[in-house]
Length: 175
Ligand code: 5GP
Image (cartoon, rainbow, N blue to C red; front, side, top):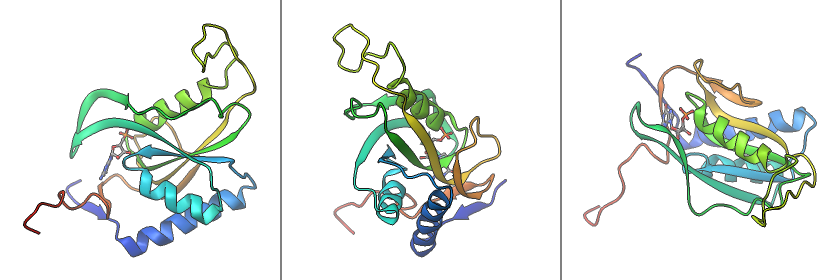
């Protein structure tokens, strides 16, 4: 549709608290919050504070190059977080929106694969299995076409969303 969903800063604050409440109500307490950068950075920080979780990581994934314009597939960009701590942990992956859901699907696969037997985190050529990664996902918005249904969702929409941190162009010297 042509209409857009506009999320304001104030409303974002409520969304983050509500998402955290959903997690708490489910009785599952994450050891670590992983932000999907850049869109998930601000939400992940807010949700981590609301949950009282101090440990955080970031995975940088690029997919969208404009409104509804994407690369052929989502790509993980450097710098890569240290994933050696993940096995045996409860990890909450936070992003702004699951649209096609491909970014979140990629990150969930990546995080979970770190806890699979045969996984080689240290790259020494030998498997270093030390426990499964119990990973769940949280997003502010989920769209109906998403290939994955996130565990925690604040709102559902099929519109293009304007987030408060990305709705304005980068600042220039003049302003
Ligand atoms: P996906 O892989 O689920 O299609 O989307 C990946 C990323 O693209 C999202 O985390 C988000 O940063 C960006 N994106 C997707 N849909 C929207 C949208 O409706 N509005 C904005 N601002 N970004 C979006």
